Length: 205
Image (cartoon, rainbow, N blue to C red; front, top):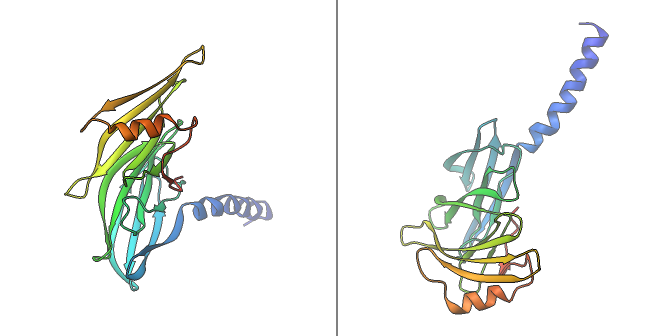
């Protein structure tokens, strides 16, 4: 192999290594009353694969198709049970990002798929609902409130849309989905500053 070929190979390796590092991560998912679960996540061009270990023994392997193999999965306390849940990025490319949410089953050392949520920011409100803040066109944002069904799935419960026109006149209206928006949630959300999330923000992304 010539010197030029060696230099070229070294340059390609230097470029490839950061990409490989960006496509893997190890996470520690804490849970009440038990040691944390270890999650080893690795991506290829199409999938994130997450190996879940409980006490050093593999308890689950999760595979999620993704368009974002270089955006790392996250952990967040989603449903108020004190355990960290798994968020896997699946679709991006605009203001909002879609995440596949897996809710931890703390006593089982496993995760159950809750569903997909979409937004540019997320929080948990005072009632324990997951709130996704998403952009809707140039001048409107939508707060979508989710609850968890008896089967452990995330459900879109209701939404609140805030809009500002070219004269800086704003509207803030509830939108029923699975249920009507509680008046207290509407009042609290409409009183927020632009872009502010209700309740406790989640570190996603």
